[in-house]
Structures are given as structure tokens and as C-alpha cells.
Length: 377
Length: 129
Image (cartoon, rainbow over the protein chains, first blue to last red):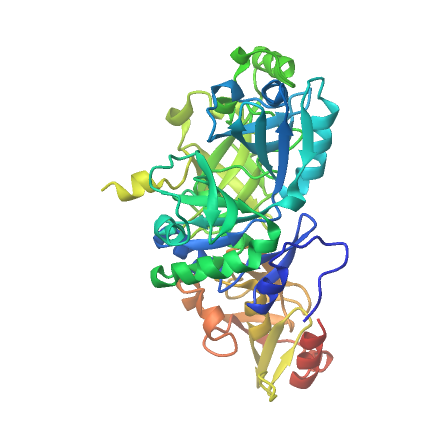
């Protein structure tokens, strides 16, 4: 078996992934499992029972000090003053020109202590960006090496994790977290995720990673838990309509374009990127992210060109089969007038170029999959 | 370990196989190819009557994760397409050397197959990859 190139970074679970037969790939400079038993099986495990993901490659940045809140509110788009201790919010770091540095989860631990979970490949640039834009009495720490992270996701995630912790999990609301212990290891237990399912993301010291991985798998065995790789993580987040940095968002894309206006709070006061966003709104946003579904035979994939009325009009940011919906779905950027009246404009016929052939598709609302809608009847 | 790749097939470095009977070559993808791709969800094959060339695109096989181009191991005319794969592409994961063949080609240059790998050569090639 080939060993990871020395240039690749590894999580504390690398040897376990290899021993358990996971297929490994270079993911943004990290040697990570893309699949264990198979993407479809892992995807279904998360939708139907529970899956376990090693997401220790994700970065953590800690901000402490009397003006920690001021710094967080200056470098992020959402309003961190609205957070209570023990609450998390989805937010973004923007460049002054309005493009994304990253999308993040900001957790408020206390008035003088915030904990940011950031994308693996961006953690060093995020840290540098925040440190370089810190005129406040606040300390910024690039803390990724101090945390491992496991995501326990799916309808049986709570029952699985509850076996290993004295923290009462049921009362933890979505996007809230509790600091406690899992199997005796100090852990931050957050009711968050990237799959569109109920579940938890657990942050803890890397030295405990192997033990917690094995204990969570044992705890979930009766529910049919599966270790999952980044392949299923991607199909799950796509169905749930969640953005992925480098695909739906990057330095050249603004939140207005990415349909992430809901995490931008211009009324909270000034923040990095606010002026550029105001100007873009005044000028008019030229392109917007839209969901699509293939109606012809073929799968629109990342990078495919999108045609409207026979002319090139945009590109696919993420696309592929949806195992839950049993159709081929994706996100694409299109001229904003297709999206202007929101859902009323969906159902617009487009074509996606697949291996040089235009394949019919239609725009559809996102998220493609919602567990509430799917299971309410 | 015995070779899992049939002795009577010839193989490409792009992981297709061809089984020759008379002037007809039956074409498929190898066990290794389907394993690397993972769950196969879509197969894009040429229509009957299409002329194809050795080493040139034949179509594509798509897994959940990615699309992978197919290259024809032989030149000739497509005379039959395995239609069952349109509705059951997962058969390519289950039986890539048998039931899940892709196309049959009436070969115009049967001598071409001497450029292809034998089962033993392919096995060595895959293990080194």
C-alpha cells in the first residue's frame, strides 16, 4: 500500500483509515478517506441511521480577550452580538472587495472567547487574514493542531453519542453546543453538521481521536453506524444545498451571488467587505447561484458550461447524482435575472454541456433535500 | 495469488478489456476500473453503427464521485450495445468481466489486439499503479 506523500497533512486517525481499508485521497493538501464501504452505502447510512466522519482536518481559530467580540464582528458578516454563550452561527470571512476568504462556524464560548471552525485548506490563510485585520484588544490563535473533530450525523446520532456522555444531548438546540466530556475525554459537543441531518460535531484533543473513533463506532453498531468518507460528505451536503468553498464560493464570489445574503447583517455596523457589498447591491448583482436538476440523460459535473437559449450563460459549481432523490442535481451560476423573482422563476429550461453535448436540465429550488419535508408525511 | 483477469481477454492501460471471437470484439472495463470508480451510476455508450478507433473515446462511465472516459481497445463498427446498463449501471460493479460488457465491435483491424496487454501483463501493471 502506498504511503502518503510527506507533503500531505494527516489527522490522528490516518493509520486507522488505512487499516480499515478506506480509499485515501489528497483533499486540499490532506490525506483523507474519500470512502470506506462505498459512497452510496455511506450516504444512505447517514440518511437512514447514523454515520461517523473524521473531520479533524477542519481548522479551529480561537479569539480571546476583552475585545474578542469586536474582532469577530469586524471580520465576519453575520452579527456575533446576537450570539449567547453556547450558541454557534454560520458566517463568512470576506476580503475588503467582498469575496469570500472562507465560510465558517462561529461559536461563542464566553463574552471574551470565540471559537471558529474553518475549512481545512483555508485555515492558515483565515488565521493570517484575521490576525492582519485585528486593531482590537484580542488575541488570535491558529488552534487547528489542538483539536480533532468527529461528525456523528443521522437520525440515530443522538442515541449513539448519548451512550458515551453524561451531557444530556436532547435539550441542545440546533446550532448550540455544550462543553463536557465524551468517554472521559474533554469535548465540545455542538449540534451542527454538513449533511442535512440531525447530528453532532465533537471537538476534542487529538490524542483521544483513535479511542473516540472506536468507541463511537461501537456505540452506533446496533443502529448500523458506518464510517464515512469525504465522498458521502459531499453528496450529503449537496443534497442539503450547502456551499463548499472552492466550488459555490471563493475569493471571486460575494454572498449576494452565492444566495448567502441571510448571513450578511449590514445593520450591525461596519465590517470587512461591507462597503463592497453595498456597492454591488446598488449596481445590481449580475449572477446568482441556482439549483438545477438534469432532465436529459447525463450528469452535469463541476466546471461544466451552462447554456441558456443556445448561448453560454454560466457554469456548474457542484453536480452529481443525488442518492436520496435518485436524480442528477447540482448548483450553477446563471445571470441574476433568472433568479430575480426567486422560486417563481424556477423551472427554467437550461442545457449543461456534458462531453461536448448539450443535455437538458431545469432550474429548481434548493435545498434539494430537506429532512423535514421528506419525513413530515 | 491466481490472476483474476481472464486469460482470453486483452487489456488496455486505461483499464478496458476486449474479448475477440471471430471478427467481433466484446469490450468492457476491468475489475480494477470499477473498484477505483466506486458506485457506478451512469454509462454513456455510442449508438449501434458508430465507427470507433483504437485508443479514441468510446464513451464514459460515471460513478457517484466522477466521470471517467472510456477508450476503445479496438477499431471498428459498434454492432451491439449492452442496453441493460442504461437502467442497471450498478451491474458494472457486480460483474465487470461478464454480464456487464459494454459494446460489441466488428473489428476492422484485428491485428491491433497484439498491441494490448495480456492478462499477466495487465495484472503486473495494475499492481504497480
